[in-house]
Amino acid sequence: MSLATHVVATYMTTAPITATAVTPVEEVAALLATRRISAVPLVDDRGSIVGVVSRSDLLHYHRHHAHLRDVTCEAVMTQGPIVVEASTNLRDAARVMIEHRIHRVFVVDGGRLTGVLTTTDLTRAVDAAKVEAPIESVMSAPVVTIRVEQPLSLAMEWLDRAHITGLVVTENDWPVGVFTQEEALAARDVAADTPVGELHDAALICLPATTSLHRAAAQCARMGVRRIVVSKKHDFVGVVSGLDFAGVVARA
Image (cartoon, rainbow, N blue to C red; front, side, top):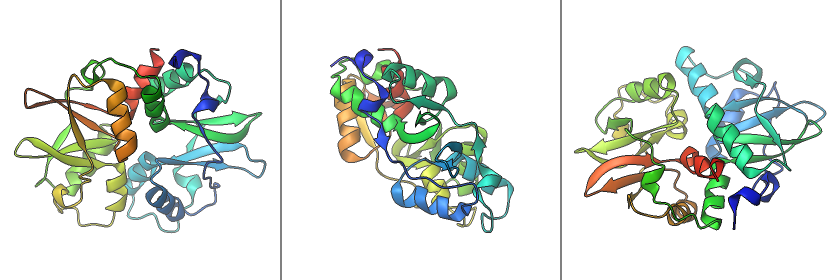
């Protein structure tokens, strides 16, 4: 199956969860946590998309304000969200994600929101296309790591300032999990000096650098894991994330 011949409609999710500009931010934060999604589009009365609230938006706002209570989405949303049409070539949509360093694009028809395409969807596309290249050919390196004993406040700062979605948590110089925007949002009311090792997500897979992309993508999909630690001769040499899989599609 050739990635270059498919369009967004093949892999997008229809009828995405939405909110409005006046929806309380705490409601959106709860949706992000319970549905395990990275962003919620905001629509107006006509169903047109007017903005988006992402984990990044919430974490940035929370870092500079005491709390999210009594705040509506209008105060934290990103205006002018990136959109594509269902007929857009999948490769072109992936290129948009790479260019803007985003993990999803919203799908519109005549201005009305009809779906969403995420890097998780593109990971499934890489699996379906049976891409044989090794994961080391697309991995990101060096990797931003944080030790299990380091404080939550440091992890929060790195996520916000470095504009990254996750850190690899290490113990004795070996990865034991990840601390992503998802864990950061869940920990927003936790004491700042709490060790990251008490809060990280242990759902992480470690694969040899020579593992084919489609096999790695299949494992991510089946295990619900969003990041792969890449190893070579027992050394930790890189990470493959959803955006790396998007890059595979973009270059197809």
